[in-house]
Image (cartoon, rainbow, N blue to C red; front, side, top):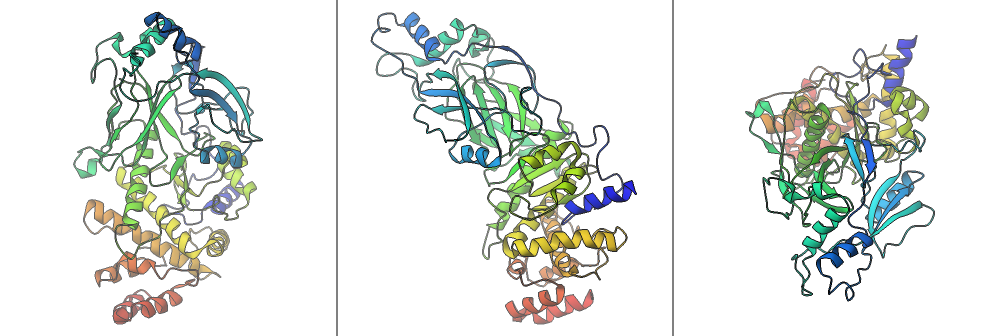
Length: 526
């Protein structure tokens, strides 16, 4: 009975499951089964921030004693922390342009990690979010906030201004006087620049199936900071990035998995909408990173899913007719201990019993108190770049279908998956005779077809996915061979297409010149 309940709970979430489906072992995890993080960041002693108005003023006076009385440094920024009560408050801050970090920036980091939760905040609640805002920032009402320091951060630009002050040297002096001289880039041999540098570099990943030549991690956000001085940039299609802020110190780098295309890869027990991978300190002139299958599993899988999403979004918009891109705020969760994926679209308003979902998520159930997923990807047993990539493409394809078919359609889809799993004797997708099976039929035909299309585009060959299921995605592959491609097929997948009979008629209606090919394909797999 316990095993039956576990499977049932899994099915409740498994709208649009892919690949292995509900394989043995899926369900609430045992020790470590869902744990996907290397551990929480461990903080050491608090450090003195060189960028406080007081420290920058003292450094200025030390270097330019005759000017110190004439140049009064105003606060340019505020170092603050917010405590959002819920997702709405968190989103409000995001929309105001606040870049938030889940740990303080004025503490020594004893051990690197990918997340931090303040011990004074209850599990399941959003932890303190640290940020740097301008002094003119309009703090939204109702969101708890504390000002930690008033800071002076020199504006980007030439280090020596018209007033004759070398502000880069003032920064360095502030580091020395605040006890942080060891962080300066001139504290040891430099590898990429002189004392001051503007971070730039390349983030790459290796796919052994393509010969092992590094390719760019595309559209990922590279962030760095030294105390309250932050800089961010997105990588281009080749993985290159360049920031606009210069540093005299060695900043701390991280990859933030909030893609330039609009989707975020998030959680893994972190109550923020996008995961990050800490990379540690690097030179002021930038950091290069090559991610390989031997790298940290979390980092590698995030980068693969990132590239799959980037490629999918670009593919949707490559030419007319367009395939609808996923929702602009799409949220993707990765779980190393599960072996199936789903596009439940809960953040977009799809209703699923949270109590059942919470039991399935186990230790991750705290997330549901604050944030909701759109896509979940279970990565257990999916080891290669190609495996993870095509699985992610499958789910991204579902999200495009959701955008065209709408919420009512998707709720019917979710409910069918649950009902059919039970009525068919726990068979993923059912057997194709249950009530409302057409929602699954059309949806899975499209998603498995897209898997095949993107896999062939990336790797060549004639790989096909989902061919053994009753809904026959090979129908679309046969139509593509006859000239009816994915872009044209997608246009018919609206809310009215609830089974293959309607699908066939609508395809003929839209593309009468392909009537014979359409009817032959559907008849072949009847």
